[in-house]
Length: 273
Image (cartoon, helix red, strand yellow):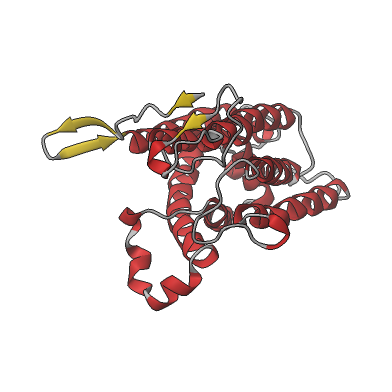
């Protein structure tokens, strides 16, 4: 049995300026996206696209900027709508109080989808081509975010057997019983494992939309599994069929991914432009 080490969330204090580890993990996520995005430029079909539609490093930078905006806006609105709609309906100004915490991955995903739609429209590119480009570059950012969750000592897991060697006591959770370090599980599943599988899958040219579909199915499945070990939100608890809100949000995500993959498989190979 382990004990949470109580990591100081402030990495560096320079007078009134506090640099938090969580902010650093975001910077790491952005850096990894840029690195992987430039590597994706060498993969097919992107490496073979020429002319005005050719992919460049500037495209990666623009997608990153729009994606960050989509994550912040979508993540916040998703949390308000999916997790506490009644509260924010009566306290609408608190939607903007992002410093109080409260972000939802599934809302952030919708925000990123909107950002990719905007990018695709502005560059006159097929939206699914943009989604296929972005998808393999996302899991490492998710992994960095889970590191931030662990450092902050948040989103801990459900109670674990005292015999579990890596069971961890999060004293600030209000209990001295060991819990599953679910942040680590999600780091390994939604972050590292999903990245390896998706990156290898995307190395070969696929039907347009299939890489994005693989991300939806992969993330949704791994998140669904991890939620069995993660403590559900105290203000929601478990919902119908004993599933958490995170699991219920993953169901349509996986279904959409399967439907997109099957649809893409039936399409002719898209012309490169």
